[in-house]
Image (cartoon, rainbow, N blue to C red; front, side, top):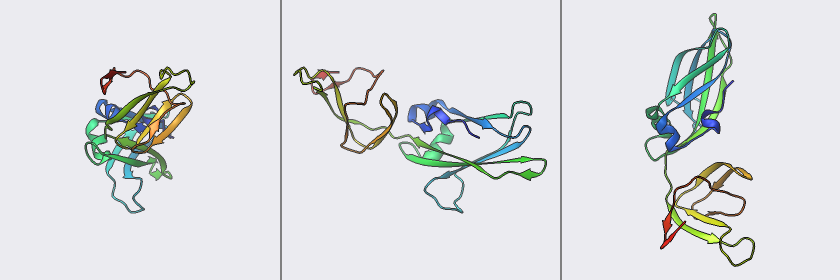
Length: 178
């Protein structure tokens, strides 16, 4: 089994830069091999990355392996790129191999730019102080938002009511500071 990588199986440019740990559980004492593929590639595709010789803890059955910034760059297809990855794990115990387990996650090293930022009035009081509409230059995947577990916004689309952005720096746009 696998634990979610990065907490949500979505690796952002910032998360990739700091590296992440991939882990899970297997048969105690087994040797584990991981192969990473472009999820859109069919069977017979060449692995983008292979990690082998990972030992599953003989007592707890846990395993973990660090993934570096350079490895995420390889998985994404280069700086500023994005790709969905299918990872296949095979474990060997006493000369026998298990059926492979799989995990799919996304590596997104692209950084969208802010096209526009507009205040809006959700409660009709005329204050335009109920939230912000963000328009981004490219599709983004947002996770961990209140009321929205995952939301994909296309280029030119906006995130409005029901979406909440927290812990952002001050942004100056069109003479206003938000």
